[in-house]
Structures are given as structure tokens and as C-alpha cells.
Image (cartoon, rainbow, N blue to C red; front, side, top):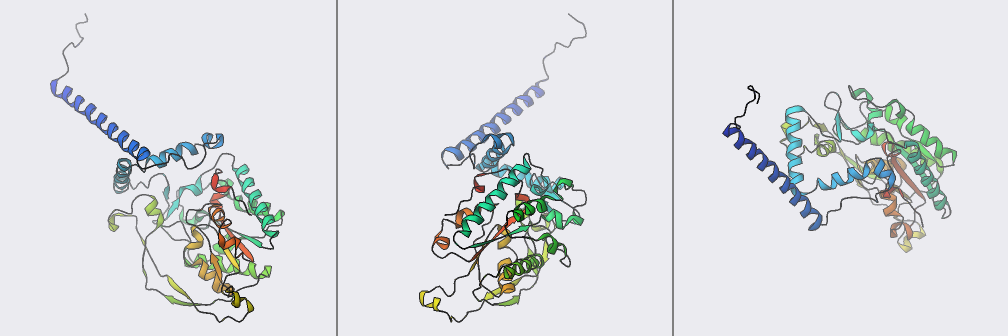
Amino acid sequence: MNANTNTKPPYAPATRTSKLAAVGLIAFLAAGFVSNGWGVLMQNMQLMRDNPSLDRVLDGAVMRDIANHMSDAPLTAEAARLQRGLGWVTLHDLGPRVRQGCEGWLFLRDELLVHRDAQRHAQARADTVVQVRQALARRNIGLLVAVVPDKTRIESEHLCGLHRPAEFENRAADWIARLTAQGVPVVDLAPVMKNVSGDAYLRTDTHWNEAGAGAAARAVADRIRALGTPLQPAAYKVEAKPEGPRPGDLVRLAGLDWLPVRWQPKGETVQEHVYTAQAQSASSADDLFGDAGLPTIAVLGTSYSRTSNFIPQLSQALGGAVGNFARDGGLFGGAAQAYFPSTAYTQTPPKLIVWEINERDLQAPLTDADAVHVK
């Protein structure tokens, strides 16, 4: 035996420490297993949102779905919440969904992702829009598509160290050109958003501010008037609210909204307005059937259409009533999927549908929410 070989047993305290660490790890893993199992079996927690197609498996979307849903399990959710808060307080880390630019500007990571088969996804969505327009035309209903530019495009001066891929430069313009070539009316909101005096987007939120929403609303209104769509008169009384703090959805998405305000990313103070619809006198025969007050324009889309008074500003710019059928988290087709089977569409169809679509959704992996059919 080698004389230099140490044959003494481990020091007793070290042995006890190793055993305690092993027991602690086993207990932690067991608790996680029980928590996840309880969520799946007793709380009907779904592991996947959409069908596990080959494309979604190769793109990593299936594993992301499973991870996202498992994170909703009780123990996992609480551990993640604490980890997010500790990561921000100690390292200023915002987690996997949010990125920080300069001077407290926050951005959604989805706007910076390059997707596999991006062009195929974009073409599939363009084909869907064309098919929807054709189906609506058979019912004498018009379609106007409004493309909302990425916050990272319009507020690029606030990106600082964040990198926006060069291939995104023509992403929206190329997609708009595909629709235009098929005869679909489209309004590109990027030029008017760039011309907003000051910032067009909220600093700690994904969405546009009231100035940006107003510029977009006026651009859409101009295009609607050019299409000659008949309007149901509407007017608003506008009152300014006192300036106050506005919580940003990116702070919530980063999992930091539970922290004391002084520990969260620096908030912002904004002045918002209250739009109150004014009663209109009915003077047409439609009032005999109760249809006089129904909007002739319906807006489908995402939370952008539900934020910063976009719909009231659009209605005010038009001088006409607008129905809001947008959905938070609706992505490309979520609002359309819910609207077309509804009685709001089947029994009281509009004269024109405005479909608001986010630039960042154009090339994202296809999901069940992208399948839009019109009766």
C-alpha cells in the first residue's frame, strides 16, 4: 500500500454535513414531486396548451409549455416568486421574459427572438388573413389590418446594450407587402409611431402610451374614412385625470410586482384621461328595431386595443362608434376565434372589421390560436 495514501475515514462533522445535505435535497425533490403531482391530478393542471406537433417539438415550444404549466404548481410557483425577487434585488436580473435597456426602460424578450421557420410562419398568417378577407367579402363586410410595431423598433434609442436582430428591419414591411399584393387593406402604424413627439410607449410596460395610441388611432381613422365605411355617430366627453403611478405589465411579467414598490424597477408617472360616451339621438329607421346604436366597426386584436384609450381615441377621431372585441393575450388570432362564432358577429355583423396585429407575432411559431375560420 502507498505510504502517502490517507486511509482515515472522513471527519465526523463532514460526514454529518454530507448526510444532512443529501436529506435536504431528497426532501426538496420529494416536495416538488408532490406539489407538481397534486397540481396535475387534483387541480386538473394541463401540461401543454396546444397539440404537440413535430414543429412545436423541434422549436422547443412543447418543453416551454410543460415548464410554464409546471411552474404554476403551488410549491414551484412560490419558490419561483422568491427566486425572482432575490434575483432582482441582488443582481438586477429580470428573468427569462423581460430585458432591461437604459434609464429603466424594460422590453419584452419575445420581440428580440429569431424563430425557426420564421418566413413559413409569416406566410401562413398572411394566407389566413387573405382567407378571412375573402370570407368577409362574401357577406359584404370589409377588413382593415393594422400592424402594431414592436416597442424595440420604435423606442430603439432606449435599448442601450440590447441587440435587435438586423433581419427584423423589414419584418413588418415585408409582411404588409404580402397582404397588399393580395388586395388586403393594411395600415402600417410604424411611421406615425415614430413621429410621436416624445415617447410613444410606456417605459415599464409592453404597450403604447396615450400619445402613441392616439397617433395610431388617427392613422386607422384616416384609412377607414378613405374606405368609405358608414359610421354610427358617437361623441365623447374627455376629462384629464391627475398624474399618478402606473404599474407596468413587464414588472408583473418579471415576477416582481409583489415586492415593496421601492424595491421594484423604477415606476413611471403618467397622466391618463377618462373618455365618457355621450348619448346620441336616434334619427334613422333602424331605431325601430333597436339597431340604431350598434357600431358599424368592430376591432379585433390584442391588449394594445384595450390599453391607453385606443378605442375611445379611434371613435373620437372617426366621430363614429367602434365595438371593441380585442382580447388580452389574444396573440394573432385569439380575438378572431372568439368573435366570429359569437352572436355579436352572426346576428349583428359590422360593416368593417379592423384587425390589430402585433409585429412580434408575425413570425412566432404557429399554435392553435392561429387557426381562424369565418362562417
